[in-house]
Image 1 (tube, one colour):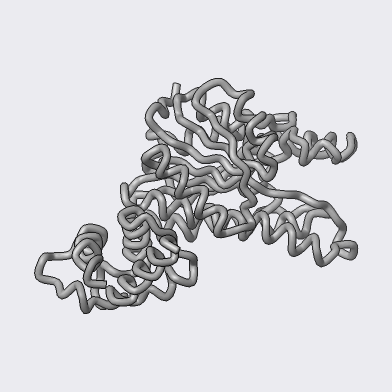
Image 2 (cartoon, rainbow over the protein chains, first blue to last red):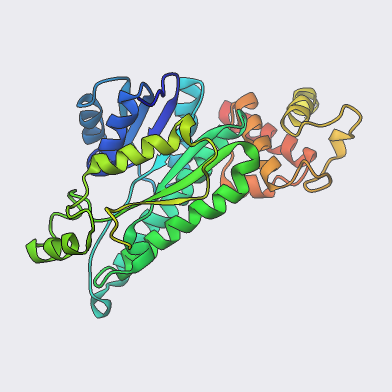
Length: 244
Length: 82
């Protein structure tokens, strides 16, 4: 069992799905976890649903100043920040000719800029101790593309690259940065896909099933642990072999 | 500025791991190897902790010397006193 006792973790977008499963996985391993969500009540409710030292706070990751303030407050209150999981993201599907300008703006601002803000702030908080681990949430569609998901896929390709570039910059400061790239995972983001699309994805997945949020959370828990201490700048697929 | 200069010097020395003989008060960004972009982030983090201030991104980018840092911190501390 991974031991994260004494570690302090921040998980953005931690109120449901992969984020909440990650909060649970880190808390089970003994970490103190601060989860965030856009809605304060939902963040506190999600935190209360997890056993362990978990608290919930409101955060809009598109607001760079708010992210910096919250990360700094977490580090100050807990005395450190060891783990940051930049999970907050949105997905709005539209075929190429039907993409509204505001969807492009909203998706890139949340998924790309929001991730950059979180990585920036977390790195700053980790700098003094010259140690820390940052995880960003890419996606299999960022590598493969997906019809109807041009904007989302582009944003996730960018997120994967954030991990690579940040890992190069931050390695000498003892900070590791990795991405996980989930395949089709059973979450609220994917429940509107329809049976045919789900069946088609399962058909292309060698392991023959959809992923579960816990599958991704377990990978994240490994990547933030001491067992992964020589792993940085990687994009780890958690997709049942979908990319093969 | 004189009030914070001593403490500021200590933070610069610690964050950038400077030798004692470095002319810290006249130091500028990229004057020395240690004060590159990564060193800059470590310095910003240390300054925020030690002086209990928060820099916005423009201030982080604009902090080009020890003197500018001193002015910024003085201004931030004065504004929080208002």
